[in-house]
Amino acid sequence: MKTSRRYVVLVLLLAFALLLQLNTWDDEYAEVEEFRGAQLQDEVFYPLKAKSINEAGLATLVVKDATFDSMDTEIMVNDHLHLMGSEELVRDVFDASVHRDQEGKILIERNGDLYTFFVNETDGSKNAASIFLQDVPLIYDETCYLPLEDLCGLFGFAYNWDETTYAGVIGEGTESYLPAKYDLRTRSRASAIRDQGSTSTCWANAALGALESTLLPLESYHFSVDHMTKENAFSVPVSTGGDYTMAAAYLLSWDGPRDDEMEVRKHVQEVQFFEEDDLDAIKWAVYQYGGVSTSIYANVGNSNLDKSSDYNSRTNAYCYRGTQEPNHDVVIIGWDDDYKASNFSVRVPGDGAFICQNSWGKNFGEDGVFYISYYDTHVGAQSVAYTRVEDADNYDSIYQSDRCGWVGSLGYNKEKIMAANVYTADQTEMITAAGFYALGKNTSYQIYMVPEYRGVASLADRTPVASGKVEQKGYYTVDFDHPVLVDKGDRFAVVILLETPGSTLPMAIEYRSGEKTAQVDVMDGEGYISNNGLDWERVETKANGNLCLKAYGRVFEIQDKED
Image (tube, rainbow, N blue to C red; front, side, top):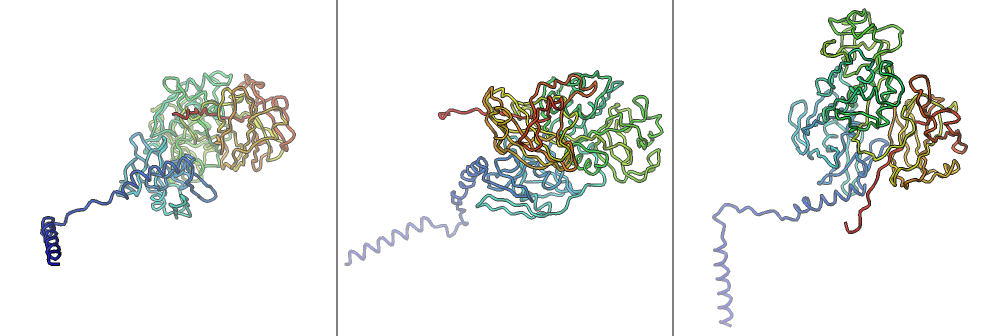
């Protein structure tokens, strides 16, 4: 018993000695490294989980009546499992101007405020005052994404993100409005001043100037006017001139634009058309996209307005109030609602002017720029904004029979029409999108595919692939909800149902109409139209034209299992 007690005492003494050796009571508190499990979750598990969520399209975002998922390019989740939105989504949802430069600087303008952010940085500013983001803007799969929770907080929008279901909702927020004055020149978004000299190429200079502006400040190009005017699908000499439909047809058919090396590096997939009563819509297009080409009547006998009674050379202000048809194209690069009516040489009902870029060199006006009154007869007419411009590898193929584009229209004397174009697959690929003209505002569409076309009867076996509505008149490329596989040599059909309120001829066609389109090959396509989706008529024989209905394909490589 005594031996046992001595043993216990000995153990206690040894333990006490050990504690003395480990004693830190007289030292400063030793910092203990945090358990690595939580950090590993952030650094390893969350990025893997985010990758899985994005690839499977598990994340969703609801904005009003629209739903997006992470298989689209509009949204994705970052490595912290927070929801991010593309520049395009941010622009559309918040009615903001969003642009990025080559150095990764992101400028967002909304309701008179200027926000500056940088890729991969949390530091930012609002009107030069420092602000901080919870999540950094990032580049993912060549698209720039911004943190939606941060932006909703800055812009005053309700926001909810459920991290368990990966479901986001953007609710009501502050209404957006345009500034009283806006000038792309002060934002490095106006293209270089061109000089058409004595040529009749204003239409091409204006179109390409507007397109170049759309790409700024991230990408700077100087596209070839010569190629657009000489190498298009139309059969007119350069001296005859052209118009906005010719420019759109050239770009939408991928004949251009051509850069300094005569390469096509950009594909135009969407254009929006405006008329002279769409002045606010034109302002929004300038604000969100860039320069907008427009037609005016230049009251001169040559390329100089100085002797025109409609031009005030002292203030560089122009206003034509007559009835002559438009004869000149310029680029709208901004506006000033408070530009005084007294600046014009003719009497106008009120203040306000568009800031316009001409193609008469820098010696004209204010270094090539002048002001056109809101009350000019034509300003805003035949206006075009290039609202979707992508790299030339966006699709691998284009199927079309309308290189001259929208020349006229047809229909059944009602707002609806169904149309189908038949093509032969150049290669085994996925048909992923279709393109069409909406010839009026608020046009609804339903798109179908027939992957194995075997005569008009097989058009009844069409499969729906996309549907929606476009607000503005223009040309639109719509990506399918589910791509459709076609084999090389097989014939397939893309089918569309269009409904344009107030229209009796809602379908755009290409046909021979005067000198400009005299070389149109009517028989290079196979198109059909229908009044009811059951009975079909061949367009080439009934209307002597081709449907303006394109298809786009992508080739997907199939990897071996060992890879």
